[in-house]
Length: 197
Image (tube, rainbow, N blue to C red):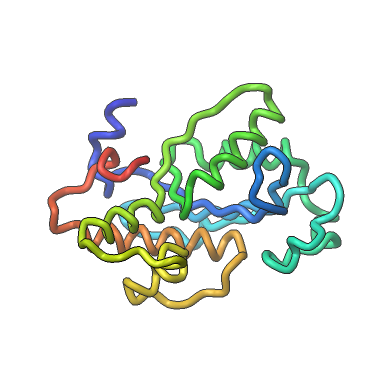
């Protein structure tokens, strides 16, 4: 396991991840969809981008105004346990990449614990934390909203995407990480230990 941390980041198998949920509390709210985009050798593997819808107890309620997923779309969704099996299989051997990773990881950990009764630990890179560190090193004032995914992407000249679609947001996060890596590449070869939270 220690070897993975000393490996150059360009040689590390990464998986950009995003979730859409019914709310922000992982102990009460539920996962609606999971989007993933692999990153190998510094390239987003768009042909292997995937999304899965997850069935929930009850209705999506008012959260539909954020993510656009409505109850009828979940009629063909898989169970939470099937979704967790799929997620673990897809991400095995990868380091996760997420924007505000603690939020997404808290939902994944809670659901995996509910499904299997076991705790799990993930290795993850948080693009929000990376951007915060970069701004603080440059002594920039961090204004409210300046660490949102779209605001971070704008600083690198990345295109604007419609938000709150798990696969699109995973792609947006993966692109942001690659831009961040390019911006800090002048500091020498990046290793996972330099970026992991």
